[in-house]
Image (tube, helix red, strand yellow):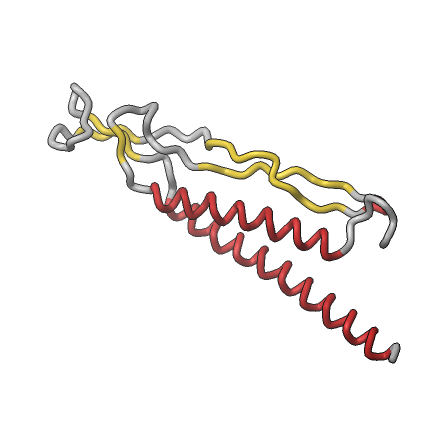
Amino acid sequence: MSMANSLSLFDISGRAMAAQLVRLNTTASNLANAGSVSGSEAGAYRAMKPVFRTIMGEAGTATVAVDQVTQANSTPTKRHDPSHPLADKDGNVWEAAVDSATELVEMVETARQYQNNVQVLSTAKGLISETLRLGQ
């Protein structure tokens, strides 16, 4: 696959791994902010999600790239806690709009996808090494 604009196995897996790393970082950020509170609904943390885009190569090859990272459309939870230092004039605080269980599942899935791509690269490296060895 040495044609211009073609995607090699290494391009495909490398880009997929980079996309999964962004996904993992957004999940980690979401988990780090779960349970945080704000004095206003607008200031409350909302989960972040990467948006992926397909990158097409010649000969029907494709890989992925992160197009952008967006805020989820989730609504922070209002809680009445007048003793909280961030409480507004009505005694309310807003908890981050993050579902920790969902984020943990996302993290496991992301780690699996990343590991799958590591395995693809490892297998390809082994096949290339074996082919070179046979050619000697």
